[in-house]
Amino acid sequence: MIFYQNDLLGLSRTEIQKEWNLCWERFSKLNPIMDRDELVELNKRFDNCVEAISAKDVGDYWIVQSASNHRTYYVKKNLNEGGK
Image (cartoon, rainbow, N blue to C red; front, side):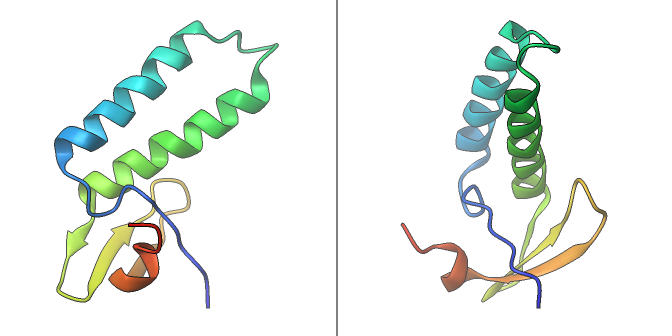
């Protein structure tokens, strides 16, 4: 079993858009050579934004299409909402 975690699932599109904008602002200020590790982390965060916006709510589960590895995940809601 593959564990999938995305803290943006269940947030409104407005909240996800705010996170997207924060990432984009940070992205535009980075040096691609000097800040490579941070760029990799920001890319993962962008993927989480895309996945959260496109996720389908089907009752007790989210159906999430991965942005990076083209897999489909079925995420039980109570597992993803640990800190909320």
